[in-house]
Image 1 (cartoon, rainbow, N blue to C red):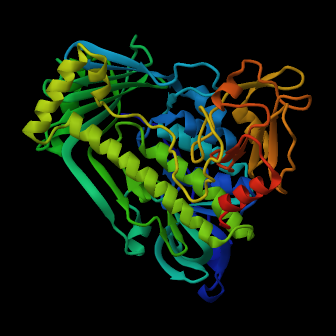
Image 2: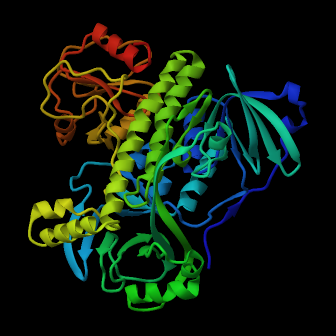
Length: 537
């Protein structure tokens, strides 16, 4: 059995030679070099913040783990300088098919319209994503990545956190203004602050097998209820790079994990599904659904993100994608607090926005789990009725739940300015910015998300020309659509997707979310919306 592995050597750091009373001090320490911790560190570094990134291992690549990365995550990774590598290696897809037995119930397309830079999803083994992020970290001198540095104790103080770190050469201490815990579902930092998860652990077990084979299956997501090769249960098939296929098979709740994960016992199951045994195993694992989260994501100066803060079932690709949304949400707020341009209370909006997103993901994951693995006769009868309806009716198809796939969160947040104008469409305050094709003065084609990156890392005013110009508050970047000095809306999709009229303007947060929108902005209106979005109202 093979899998991607990259090992990193431990290196002694000068901080280890300092006495505890004179421990080194840093603005931010990120604990955990997974996709969330790496992305958060890169984001902060690109904003000019020095970051110490600690990981207790010396390698990445323990199995594929997360494989489905959504369009929103790819746009975030574009801002971090790694999006192209992810997409070039990944398998792009947008079509999914749902089967009942041997018959197809229906199919869906997650991105049926053109005019977006990134696809709905890519499938990419997590070890590739982490390797590309580590490569980006190495390009940024502001990040100090320390392998085999395990946090074994923390002491919270009013002005920061003191950490005790174990290494192969003994323990040492450092201090940080803020510590970001991205150390996964079994987070040791969560235990150190005395916090627990609340929620539900489901009893049904699922087998994951990554198999390497040559197959003519299309690059689509296939999900089965009660397939002929796995009667009475569910199954999932996904394509990954390198001719590797992800297969999920639902097992009985009482199945013996040690027995079921042995390759000689997994092989007959996969062979029945594929109709042949010409494949090799890359990775085998078993898991149970867990839909849980911390009550609070912020404990003093220790802030939790990703699986350390919340867990959901893997059906729907809501785990890693939600963690990356945590990172992009937190980074700009923490940067402003560290610079003194926003009050520390701005960080409370991280908990407000991302805990609500976690609740939404947990609700969707729980509904998916209840549908895929009914735990009562009533739920089983309901599922059978829905599956029967889905063969004949459109509304029945919409009720089938094989894992509602990840979509960008929409925040009901104190940072948003409520609409004061009439709108017939477009993203409302609290929603993420939609992409669309644009063209520069020379006619060169590009996308709105690329212009957003080019505008800078702060707040941005997206304004539509041929209307009254407005004085932009200090520190706010601009993207102008139309007019002599703006980008061209060559296809008309920008105006359509933003319900734009001459003079329309959107105030975009640094994470690409809508802070406010106006039909006729004025400087006082913009300044009030900016103050609210930066934590001063």
